[in-house]
Length: 241
Image (cartoon, rainbow, N blue to C red; front, side, top):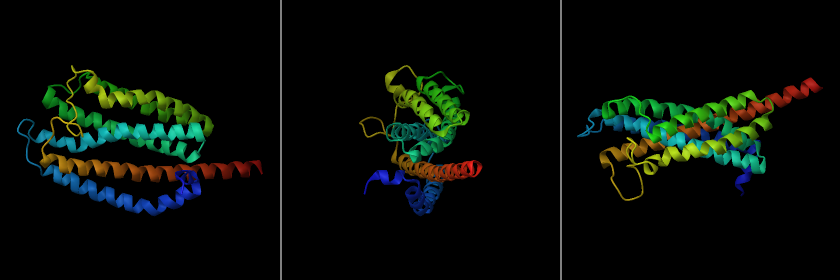
């Protein structure tokens, strides 16, 4: 079986309908358990109760970056192989990524104010994240501004390539510029400082929940885009007939 079979809209609709309830259920359970577990974790000896915002901030920031990477992969598939489902999936993912970026920026500001003494700082990672959010808005606006769907997919694919630079910087800015206020990664496979297991286990569960939530929303929105494309094609045929 080839993965390209799922680029067929009929195959995608059938498969996504079967897995959607399971993914949605997994997202609901993971988020409910993870967030409640995170709320019940002990206070941090330095940050107090403020540290608990990481159960929203870290998964949202992770998804904001990775959603753009997914959009890049889908856009490349469209540009190279011209599979419409991949272009529609990239389009469907963009608003979800934009919301995740907003959540990351807002929770980061709330977390940073008591830690840094300011709601905003032109820290390299924060700045890169803000620019990434503007690219999300530009991507969504470009889809809306171009009437021809294929032309819109081409142009947004190119925009996605450019925006990927800032997705990369958002992830690695702390390591590029040591003068930033933002701390380095504490959830990593590399040696270094690690958060306590009292926080890491519920955090991993929240990260899983955010990922499954994204997959759920992606499937729902992509299915909607396919139906919208079919409806537009039927209306065009009726007008021509």
